[in-house]
Length: 482
Image (tube, rainbow, N blue to C red):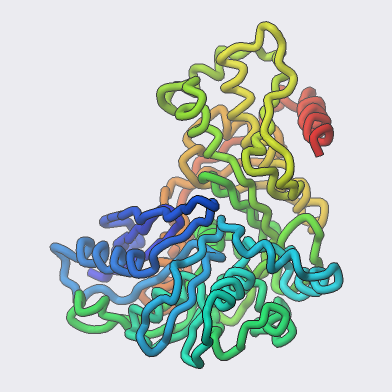
């Protein structure tokens, strides 16, 4: 028997999965961590809690197996969340600033248009406190003294540093590309960017390909001997890898609290569009894959809102039948701008609203509009990607809890006029990084991804006659708010 461990450290918690030599999930364990939100709305995580949770879950998942048969581990992580720690003590100087937190807005607001343009040109990312660089800068500005042994890193760097007992201070290109400090072309830290954010290059980890050997770990003595960490990759990137997204034009949409839509654009950066982000998808086997990405703030979260805040449904299981009762001619739209609208609109100054209601709009129609708002937002990002890339989109790979809703998936296929491939795996990110680690160390063949199956949904021919009308209605409503 051969085993591979996959670690998925995400915003809400940590999952650890154990895979066998066939790539099947043998066991899965998970644990949440505290969301530290203060009176200013600042969002933080305790780095030590996250690390201890990883150890606790690994200890749990290896019970009952021969630990000597574990060959490697891969790590995928929440992106942009920023940490600063002391390399001598190994202790954080501040809680991690979560990607959602905008406390560094004053820093990014202080830069001029020319500087913002330079950031976008070099990194492929719009200047924003959302990314790690401004978060590092904010933490450093709170310190009276800046010792030489400081380390600035994302969650992957923190975990690798702790797991290797300080031997490895590294990150991979996918995570580095989301810090706003890495040059997309050179795949290295950019001196001009570091100077702009006033961050010493010596504080930053070495950047490595995603399928590199990142160091050795025994998980603080849980294993009898050390094993190699053979893959590190950001969570959204790992999901695209799991969906076999190595070809230009391959696209995936993850339906979570929000949604990450990511498209492979090839091995060179030929475009830096204003309304989408460009990042490194991953670098493996010597090839660097670049991606376009757009993020939707509220996708699956609108279903939670419908259930918990509005009380329109008692469980998500009700949605399918409820939506089927809605009048087809109803033209109600939900614009779910609860925290503004993400890509491709980028407007954080508008609020959510139902538009187009009539006296006979009822519970079923509101539920239908809520569910459809997810598909409209994702379609807007996909349409923008298609326009700037000039690549045909014939299939969209999807994963996440809301993909179980048949109405949503059929409506998404109809709107985008493309086939939807719904992954049969529930843990796309963790599967992606575990497979990459297994391939890198020789535990898996390069064909391991071929075994991942999907359920496919095609556009309904009957929808063709109303597709443009539906999209025009959405665009009209959104443009009225912008």
